Image (cartoon, rainbow, N blue to C red):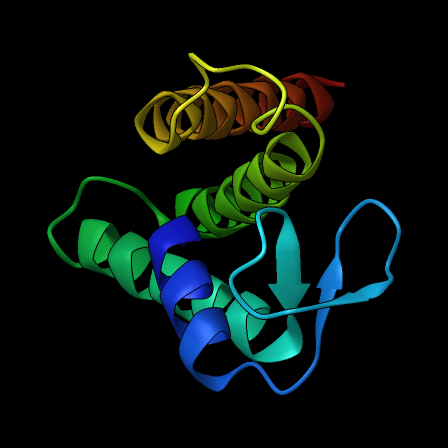
Length: 121
């Protein structure tokens, strides 16, 4: 989701905004988001999640959770890029991608636990 959103946003984003202030910024700015990039990221995460469903790794609820978790992680990564990445030398794109992956994993686990808890009530 994040890579697709970044690359599509850089290439095709008509208007890009800093995620923390919603002020217009140049394409490629750390923490910038665009409608085109965001939609591409959602579509990419859905495509990958549907592959998981197609091979029996997740059910349709899991597909939904994967897309939501990817959306959360991608946007939080943009927040990290806009706020911390330029201030911390060790916070490279690779480190931010690791953090993004962990955020997505935590988000999907929390969604699944919440779903399980709600369905038990």
